Image (cartoon, rainbow, N blue to C red; front, side):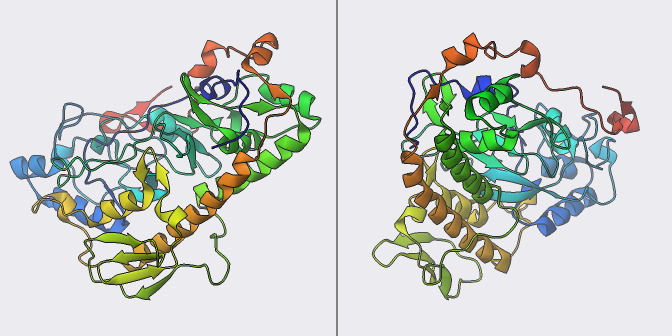
Length: 404
């Protein structure tokens, strides 16, 4: 865990005041590890009529085939009642359904119980989502994502198994407006850091530092701050590398030759079991083998749940026959193997950075009391609410337009 631990570290909730509960899908079938399955599921729903369509859809108190809801901001789905909908689905988009697990979603507000439209209004190529995690020994207190994180959908096959999954906490976008505008930081924080450090950090630098030093506390995630320029430089540089690994955009990470994981024995058409040989550093996927996989990668946990277990489990779960979830690849797709090799690489590299995090020894701390004295804390009530954002007209129920 991070080594910078002043007694009066400010709370993340005060430094990044605006937060949103993660979107909750309410049904599993609108999300999947591959986009083609989603389009096939939608087509199957559109072909069904009456009670058959209702049964496939999976009505809840929040959504039925007759729910009238507006368009999901920034997406091009229909807004008419699903009971009489036809045609193709909205183009699937990337989301994060679990730690380091990017999947696909049909971005249709009619399918999602609690979509959190305010989150989608600020989702773009410059946005970074900081996601609080359930406190667990040795696990990170904070992760980041470049795509909207959602509460993992509950599969029809797992409702009785209660398989453990790491569920995201509050989501704190780095920017309150699209285009990287208006940082979601306590007003005056950047100015105070510039004064104490002798240079002006950007909002992304503050997030990088935060990721490197964040730790769980009794009142929530805390973020030890420092006025020491050398310590800040080391911590923010480390945090930027962590951001790069977590966001998974740009150049793909690689381990040095000889340490890179490879497929040593082909994976079966559709594997069912994942196990690990610690002595051989080998990941066994039925008769398939991937190595080397360091113990640190296998043991990497978020919220007390092993990341590799959760990632694999979402792909091999056998849904109930006749459900939309059951429409899925019949054989293990090659891109999933590539994703698994990259995930092992990321877990390995992040594990190696933990020692550097522990070396961030507290120097010249900026405490919550210091921020209160400077008038930065508590942040104004308005910073806890979303900004008024409307970059384009949003279609409301039945094709009407929404004014914000």
